Image 1 (spheres, helix red, strand yellow):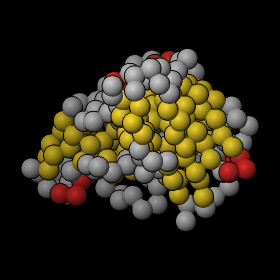
Image 2: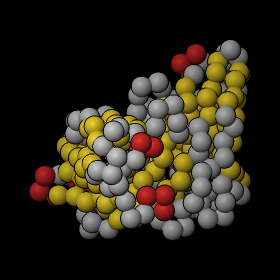
Image 3: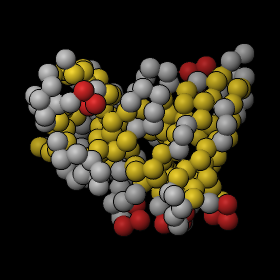
Amino acid sequence: QSTLTQPASVSGSPGQSITISCTGTTSDVGYYNYVSWYKQLPGKAPEVMIYEVSKRPSGTSNRFSGSKSGNTASLTISGLQAEDEADYYCSSYTRIRTMVFGGGTKVTVL
Amino acid sequence: QVQLVQSGAEVKKPGASVKVSCKASGYTFTSYAIHWLRQAPGQRLEWMGWINAGDSDTEYSQEFQGRVTITRDTSASTAYMDLSSLRSEDTALYYCARDFGSGSGRWGAFDIWGQGTTVTVSS
């Protein structure tokens, strides 16, 4: 399997909303509702922000939301804040019991 | 508290093997799957494989088929990742992570991560 397709970078001003897309195939994103999103700060381990497409772990701000349509999942960050600046990765469980990750998106707060 | 603690940094020569450990504490080890991932400097996360800590079932990425073996020791609450035939491109930070939904048949969400183990492959 290859990687899920994410934009390399997305930027926005404080208070704005941004959306990061994550495109896979009918064997991964389109097959199960097991899409997760991770935030990674430099030098740190990733942190799960969204799981099972749209669920938020306790402690994750409700400014983060997830959705899916067909083979494409999306992460939306509303009310963008300086602390949201990080790399974001999507992942999906696949039909053959493996995992696949996206290439990562660098979010910049202008 | 719930945590995964990985073994220390390794320096290996090309062609050698490396074994990284991941010790779980604060939860029932056999109730969840453990995944292994890696991240080369400045690069994306790359998934390597997982093990069901309960029944030892495993699955591996095709990218590493034949080179990676994941095992676990329930008495030590520890998972292991063994990578063989190392080459310079295997230089990376290796992570283990707990799949928190796996205990209830849901997959692919990693809530607890190890601190990472740096593996450097150099002649």
